Length: 96
Image 1 (cartoon, rainbow, N blue to C red):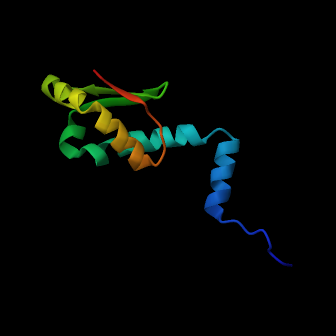
Image 2 (spheres, rainbow, N blue to C red; image 1 turned 90 degrees about the horizontal axis):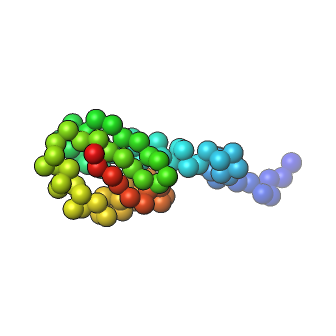
Image 3 (tube, rainbow, N blue to C red; image 1 turned 90 degrees about the vertical axis):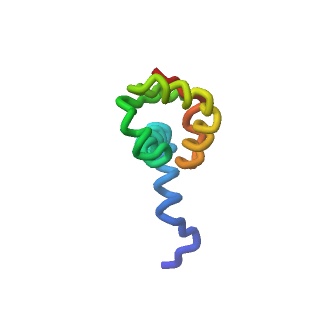
């Protein structure tokens, strides 16, 4: 038996996830899990809740000063988080 059309397992998994509409929720969860890694342990310690709705990341912070600081760098944070995941998962961040 010859294998003329062999594909890598990674490609097959990506195709399956896309067909079953599981790619977006998986990328959203990856982004939420990457928050602490991208932002660092100090900022992550001030974070209480994260969720994504309509391509907007909602972040609940316990420090008003940190909230103001992060609002100024929002565009760069969106780019860094999307780059870390490897997909355009979010378009904006809302800090509360």
